[in-house]
Length: 78
Image (cartoon, rainbow, N blue to C red):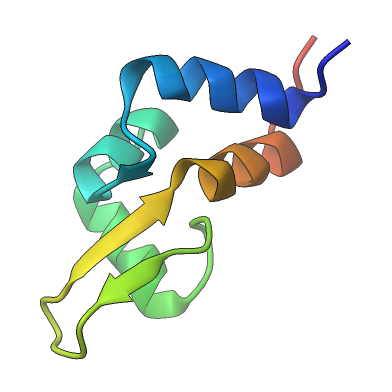
């Protein structure tokens, strides 16, 4: 049997590319983009991400594998 991380990853892979932005993450987590921005500023509450650049408004991307791991660690599946 597959573990939760694999099930989540496969489910997300059907809908999204291997990397996602703030809008896609907000849809997956069912929160607003402004909440995602606050979590990034605090450094908690979102999966590991990559910031593409050094400016304040640089693009931020998440790898689906990191999102899957984060979800598997924070939600229970029955």
